[in-house]
Length: 114
Length: 114
Image 1: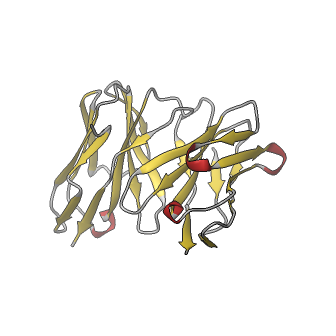
Image 2: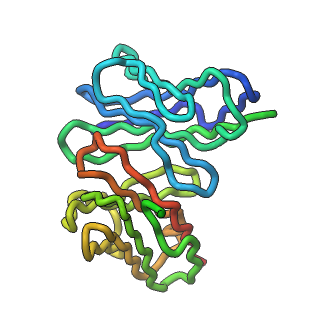
């Protein structure tokens, strides 16, 4: 079964600084990988996803993520953080075939200082 | 024009009561899900339905019974509520049940059991 780890529970950055949120997955084959964002009091919204092909994927709101098979990682990045990016970020992994469920990481809370 | 809607948004009830949460999607999707998010923000799938048929049933107490009257609706009924059921419950939908699909989430229902 697949699993995902987000090592950082809480990250604080200053507005305008760069951001990298870490995600490591465990799965025997190439997984489906996702980053979702949850603003306070809201449901989750998809930022970006990776299935195959180009390992650098672009998403909404200026986010990007890079799939590194050798490191089993799918880290999320943004070059310049805005105060509105403060939210909870979830990495998720889906298996090809099998139970077809998504497994979510425990999330990273992002705080943005003015 | 809400894509995935849930009612109610908040639900406060006593232990031992029975309650229902309703979910509707207007995206024309075939698959719907229920997730539970605990106080530490951990998000875990409970059930998924594809075209009104149950396809994922995680280790959930029998007190939880999903019902899908049609593919646009997935309701969650909970019997004999317990303190540990307090959480935010999210409904989601996707085009089909493949884990490569983007899932669209509702705003959540915060259930508090006293």
